[in-house]
Every structure is written in C-alpha cells, then in structure tokens.
Image (cartoon, rainbow, N blue to C red; front, side, top):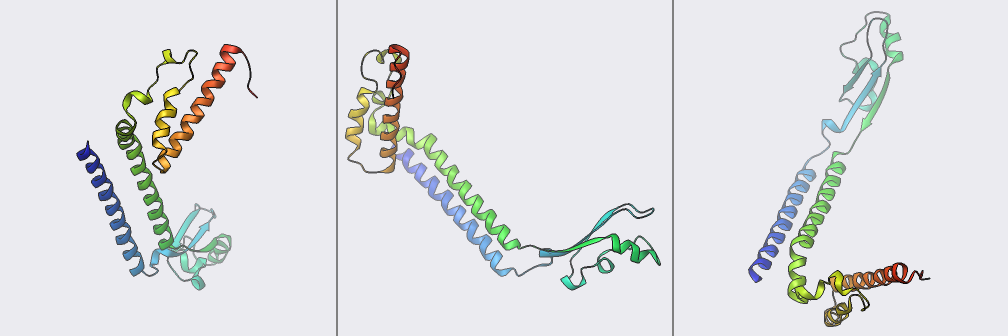
Length: 198
C-alpha cells in the first residue's frame, strides 16, 4: 500500500515538474520573440466586379500602406477600372498579440493538467485512502439496514474519529454524509409516512 501511494506521489510530482518545465520553456521563447510579421496584416475584402469574382487579400504591411493599391496583388482589372474596383474593396488593418494568445493557452493547459491530476487523485488515490482510514465495511451500508433504524448510523462514529484530522477532505466528507442523512430522512418521511417536511 505504501509503495502504491509513493508511486502516485512520484507520478504527480513528475507530471507537475514536466508541466512547469514546459511552461517555463514556452515563456522563455515568448520573451525572446518580438512582434513578428504574423502579428500585423492588412486584409482587403473585394466584392465581385464585372467578370471577376470576389476575393479576400491579406498582406503583412504597415498601417499607413493598408489600402487596395498596396494589398491587392495581382490587380484583377486594368486601366481606369482599377479606381472603381478599389473603391468597392474594404481594407482593414488588423493587429494581434501572439504572446497573449500563447500565455492564455499555457494557462488553459495548466488548469487542464491540474484538473487531470485531481481526477486521477479522486479515482485512484481517494478510495485507497478511505479504505485505509475508515475501513471498507464502515462506509458501505446495504439497503436491508435502512428499515426503521437510523440511516447511516455508523457514519457518525466514523466522522467522530476523523474530526481530529482537520483537512478539507474530512470536512467535505462530513457535509456529504450529513446531506445523505437528510435526504434519507426525507425519503423515509415522504414515501413511508406520506409527510412532507417543511
């Protein structure tokens, strides 16, 4: 049991260290990178004109050069139609921060990794700890025991022993047992006695 617990701790610490190393590596790359050509662009949307179909043009240029004459290449029309064609085009200068996008993705993946570790803890480690701390037979109550006795009668004994350990898991367990007790009493009152509790 101790080797299994130690294995889970090593796995958790290894995953945490690898996530931390990946985050540091990505942040170092982000700090070295200045604005690259992909962070700014001029986008021109040109509708259909005469025999030419509509088209979207993108070009990485400065904001002052963001117009149809600098972005649309090759120009689909010639001569005097160029001005009429360009008047129909709508050009916008767009700027984005790839650093912000990457940092947001790193934060999102870190939270996802923490939730994954928590899921592994809840599915693998918590049942082992419960069996070791509380005993397997004390937490399981069959439907035959529900009858006229008090439901979850042994839960109070188990919780009385665990109250000495002041951690979040015990507080949650206590609240869960109390809630189960209340639900069981309500079911008994409604279905057996046909009385609604106020």
